[in-house]
Structure formats: C-alpha cells, structure tokens
Amino acid sequence: MFLQQAVDHYPRLVAFSFTLTLPYRKSMTDYRALILRFHTEVWQQIGKYSWQRQQERRSSPPTLLRWIWEAASAPECKMVLLLNLDTLGRVHDESAQQGISGMLIDAWIAVTGANRKDVTNITPVILNRVARGVFTTPFNQFTAQVKAMTVPVTLARTSVICA
Image 1 (cartoon, helix red, strand yellow):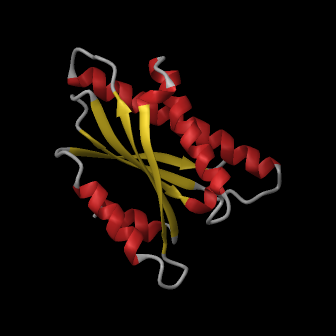
Image 2 (cartoon, rainbow, N blue to C red; image 1 turned 120 degrees about the vertical axis):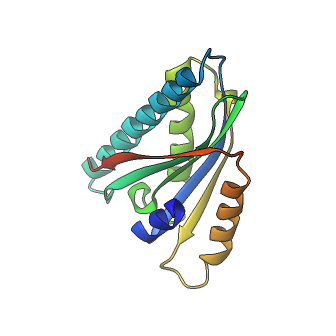
C-alpha cells in the first residue's frame, strides 16, 4: 500500500536504496532517534537544493519524502528514500542523482560524525509511469529490494518540500 501510494502520487518517482552503518547505541529508542535526525537532515538538505534550483529559475516542484527502513538494531540498516524525480531536474540527470547521493552521505556524517564509508550501496531506481514501456521492470526490481529487507520495516513520511 505504501509503495503504491508513492507511485500513484508522482508520475516520475526516484527511489534511493542504501545501507547505513550504525554507530553503537544503548537502546532501540536511541537508534530510532538517530534515524529520525538523519531524515530531518536529509529533508533540510533537499529543501536547500530545491530552493537553489528555483533561484536559478529551474523547475523544482514540491516533493514529499517517503522512507522505508529495517529495524535499527543491527550494525547495518537498509533504507529507501522515495521522492518526486521532477524535484531533482530532468529524468536522466546523473549529476542530480549524484547530488542526492552526496546529500545522504553528508546528512549521515552531520548526524553521527561518521565518515563517508558508513553509507554504502547507494542505488537510484527511476520509476517512470509517463514513458511507455519503462515502468514494469524497475518497479519489479524495486519491489524485490523492499521485500528483501529484514522484517520488521518501518515506514515514514517527511513533510512536503516546496522551497
């Protein structure tokens, strides 16, 4: 249901899957707080990115950030960020995708003081319902990635970014 809502909301959606190496915390509550601080930091950085695009007179429509992540008690946590691809720019803009990858790394460093190697396997998947014949395969790959996550998974939404 959560995935279908995200796909239905934006005709061009991008999903960034990645793995975080978690620093030691004493309790699940501490892990959850750390991850929520990370989400807030990413939200702020994407908001700045969107604002900069608009200042340059380039399109950056609003986006809602959706998150899926594994229960954070192991040394690693698989996570997925879903957002409106149009917020980043053109559909196949590699520099925008690399920019978001950099924001994920920078946000984790800001929250944990860790280093760049603690965010790994960043993989963007473009789910484009607008173009003919290019939706089903990426959607099936993405769905398989989410189903491979260790249960339980947590779902969350971060408020709309509209700089």
